[in-house]
Length: 289
Figure (spheres, one colour):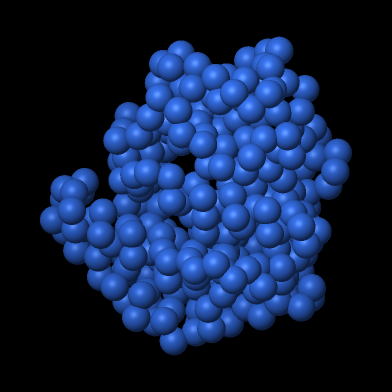
């Protein structure tokens, strides 16, 4: 785990500078992003991986703008904290933003609620007017794959071919603002209901990307087709459109994107993560676009 001492200092100094005095420092997550609870209601997210592929604060500013838009229009999301400027802030070289603390409950999110709340977010995102990168995380992953020797030449070819085909195919479908990284880790069941968070990967693309992202593990890794199908059905029942061809291509693109980022996010993966990576690679070698 990264040493959080300096990022903690960066977050606490920034909060104090804006009139909020931390009364605790509970580490909720310590990875490439450090998540801290600093008061009863204040949570700070600090980017620790300052040498990673993303530089500066533009992507954090995009996340903040989307979170504000979603909150203002009543979407089921964790809001930015109202007592500090939205930012993003930067201190000691660390990008930081501040969020409202929400109380989690132990109940597992139910598939119908997942599909319904995802559509609610998409419905509100249609009116988000700021420019977003087109097919952002997919094109970004292709660039990373070409710039870094993260895999063998054979694996790089498989990943590149899938990413290039996905970009070509998905460009033909309707696009709108998306979450960009809609997996279970970015979905929190709280006393306020089911809430989405972590909008830093937001981009302009087909809605099927987010649907594929939330069902990928269930459908491909766990072969829990009932859960995957129920989420998709709930999304459609709420008014969402999920084209079958686009959804299939997004499942492929999602697997390729996650694979490209694996060595960056998990430089020393444990046995479970290694097994998941191998499963994705085997699936990608056999799946047809």
